[in-house]
Length: 110
Length: 113
Image (cartoon, rainbow over the protein chains, first blue to last red):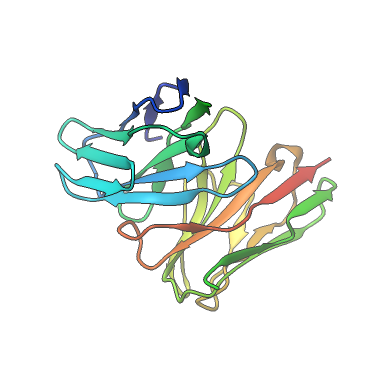
């Protein structure tokens, strides 16, 4: 069983704060790293797909970086808003199989 | 509208009664996958399919079957459901395996008594 770890498990921040989460994964058999946003009572929605070491992706106030050699990815949210409240999942892909972390639950307090 | 649909959305059944959860996508995606979500655990992959007639086991395939006879459909079959298969199930699809983002269906909440 392949281990993907996310930290912290949960996070409460004030509106306007910037925050970041970590996803750790094995440095071998890497094919891609996915980030998803999962709101309560909805389905996970894709944020980023990252494939190359050193990749940086950005979508609005959310960005992500990737280090495949040391096996981690960071997700950053700049100026958090209440609508950013969700669970953020990362998934390690070996090419055809996916291994998900348990997620970081973010609550943004107005 | 591009989407992944699952049916039923909710199901309560009894141990041993065969059931099928359907999954369909209208995006001409090659890759489809089934996951289960249990409290305290990340999404775990049950089965995946790289293309029509090509399926393979994920991390937790025991007690499940799948088929991919058409590109758009990827049903999940529980031949003899047991209480430990009570879970939230998601179907997902992507254009290509790994390098394309996955689109998730709305989920199926299954309870086996």
